[in-house]
Image 1 (tube, one colour):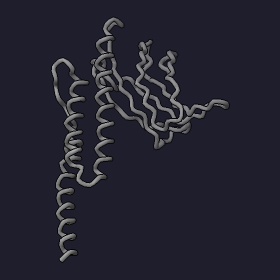
Image 2 (cartoon, rainbow, N blue to C red):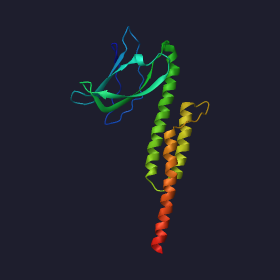
Image 3 (cartoon, helix red, strand yellow):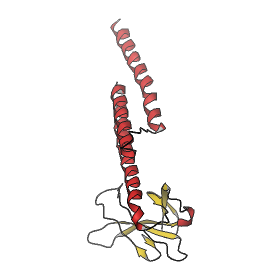
Image 4 (tube, one colour):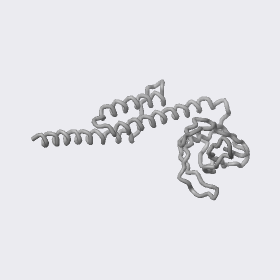
Length: 193
């Protein structure tokens, strides 16, 4: 990453096609610089690293209101053509001094934790949908995930949140499994008769 000559580099995530960094970088606005240049490399131990893609992010699109923007960006090749690879960034433009960053970082870390819990929960529920009669396990995992996300977002208040996608995912599966079970029982009795 390069922002007006301020350069930062993430850690290397080896043998991972979907790396998650969970790293925070701070840049100070210098003069009229508004572009954050970001380049993603494929690490090679014995040869030069290959460029996967790059983007320029106009920081003027993010007002200095302290809001955390959760955004996906398509990477571009060297000719500025859009690639299929994407990168997700949490961007926050703040105007106060460094001493206030601790609370902001804590809020970002809570959001990271909640998104990580949500992603793992969705993966588990998708795997469960492939098993017959797993609707009760899905419902149990959904409640557990809802509590974990609520604790990650607001551990003191006990606030509970869950995305609409998860509710839709599990509510459709109940009826599908009930219908499949009924159909299976009917077919078995029809064959025995």
